[in-house]
Image 1 (cartoon, rainbow, N blue to C red):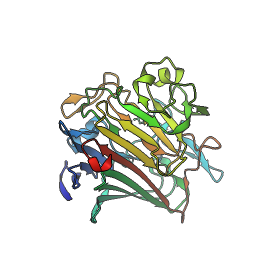
Image 2: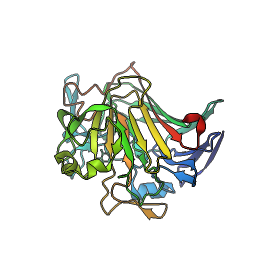
Image 3: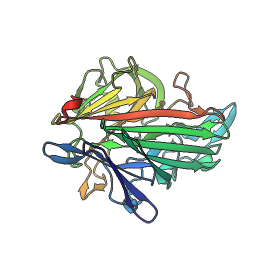
Image 4: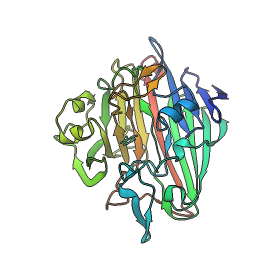
Length: 351
Ligand code: G6D
């Protein structure tokens, strides 16, 4: 196992974590983000996530790629919520009138403090950041740590911890885009997807949660048995047409501890990502970039050129009953883990 560190721009550093199987995870303290995830395959090394080559490129192109998202993942309709009967108005985008991913200049744009940790089984980089009270209108000063670990079992584990001095909202996630072909000019249509969810959250034309949890049964959003993502793209199902793919919260069943909550398999079946999380929802976004996808290592990302697994509490939690509680209170610290476990076809031990 090995860790190296190098400059990634004016302020940021890039940390490379390599395990004993030749898997390398690269992360930067700009936004506590994953930049690259290289895996060995029969036809050579593949980078299975979308990322840019420098701090400057992230700032100029897209700060959400691979970033830690917060304070609140997804949209807060009209930027309004209340805590203990006190009403708050947070920053809203002037075009959409909603607050997306905690508003601008949030976690994804900050330079986080960094520490490296190592034991016999895994390498970790620990990112910490303090967000001052009233940032984008959110109450409470919160201290957040996000730990990325890479194990010799080929698991990328994210551990979130946070505390606050005043009751506030907190619902972080990670915005990694996977493309298991290693080629951003190929769509994820031929990837196979499983989501262990009996229900998804219906969204409106602004991609806000409507408050309706709908059974996936008899809809194209039924991924309880593994199938190609294309099976959604090809339908006229109104929820697919509305957002031109998937941009939906799926309510996870969590029936057993052993089985993954979601699975993604490459078209060649040489790479599998098993997603395990303690969160109750995963938002799946299939990178609806149209013709304006950014260039990644010299190639433009195509429409549907990536897929996210944004584990979280469902958007809509501040508006609707039964959508979970995202209030973080003083003295009750936040703790959560999500694991992206890689199964590589040339890794006999893992099959
Ligand atoms: C998230 O769900 C949202 C999308 O709607 C948004 O476009 C993207 O982040 C930037 O995945």
